[in-house]
Image 1 (cartoon, one colour):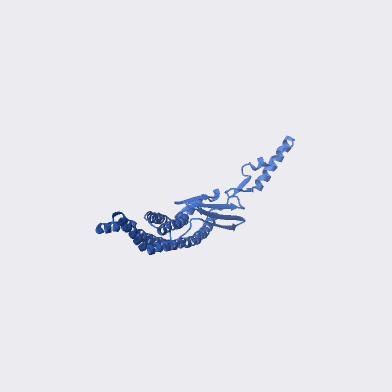
Image 2: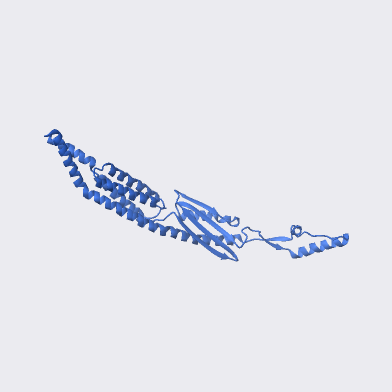
Length: 289
């Protein structure tokens, strides 16, 4: 199954009063280019996230964002007060006031700066990282599934254009014998009018050369071959975007040659229609991983 390079997925989970939320989105890009936005407390998950992306994806500009809310995202953000030490400190302040017979004012902020008054409540970042990675794995699974769903739609669009190309090719193949014969008769008439009684052998040689110059059977056969290869790639799936892009160039090359050899409105119109279908496919192929 082919996969699109554009997709979006989001999952979140409540953990001990906090919320972890992953968002993954991507757009077209020639290579795989991941961009991560992580809270400082969970920076250690970055190499594991990059490795998971590398294993599951091959192309696309992928933006991964992890949000941690309801809980400070840095260890040491929670603060506990050492009440026993605080009581001793305030008792000492009161004694100083009694000894100096002066009122002593206390700045609460300065008290909190006293060594030992506050103690950090460290967050268990290791456990939080494990939960974040588990949640990321689920989010990435949904993201890949979204790419595959869009890829299935792209495959249908590409196959419809391929059907259109084959219909135009069949029209050319059906009309080609009559086109060549009409051109032979036209050339024969012009030569006879100009020369009167031309050398029959020489005339036949010229007619054969003319037929070879305008014969597009080779181009038609290559168009059919390229269409078959595109179908095979789409059916096989995987990372075939670059291969399909190359095949679009080859299809376009044969369509151009078909147009340049055209000697009738039928083949000219067919060439134009094939090029339109190829361009429509090229736009879709740009989205394929």
